[in-house]
Length: 238
Image 1 (tube, helix red, strand yellow):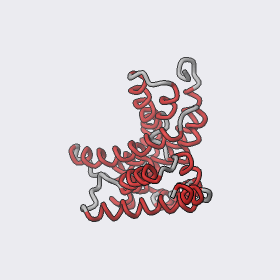
Image 2 (cartoon, helix red, strand yellow; image 1 turned 90 degrees about the vertical axis):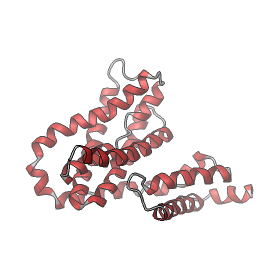
Image 3 (cartoon, one colour; image 1 turned 120 degrees about the vertical axis):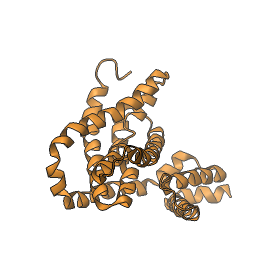
Image 4 (cartoon, one colour; image 1 turned 90 degrees about the horizontal axis):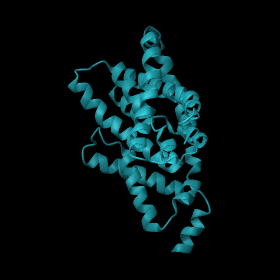
């Protein structure tokens, strides 16, 4: 069995098959329990995939190398979000002033609170560098993490938890605060929950999805430009 797995892992086919199987199985399980909005299929898929790798004795590094072909699709998927942005351009132009004020602040806080909590708990520099881009969509976050000297695996874990937490909290908080404007809800999901939050926003409506795309995209751009610069200020890099 081990020889067969090693042979299959020599190509990307097994890693891709495990990834897709875990996702569709997770989606099926969620449908059976009523598809709760706070639990995206990717969370269940990640747990199923982790269990499969453990049972089959596949090293995470080997799996990541094989699944690298799927990572290439993240870039085009992110660029495709420009279509709903274009469709909502009139609304975006009307709100450019408040967006100009809130987006840099929100992007900065998204990185600051995670790094601050980890620093207070005594985390080493590698962990801090891995958590800093945890609110940015994966293709951008990977590049930022490499620049900062963090761990890609740890960053991806933080990315998943951040997206799930954003989905779980934004909805109940908006209802509790009586926020019904889809633009605000979508923007909060995109800024805090990156791609996972954006998927949830499109389930709410096209306007929420467009503003989530805007929040996710601009947060990624601002973080990619400013975080590496801020990180290398005296006292931050280690």
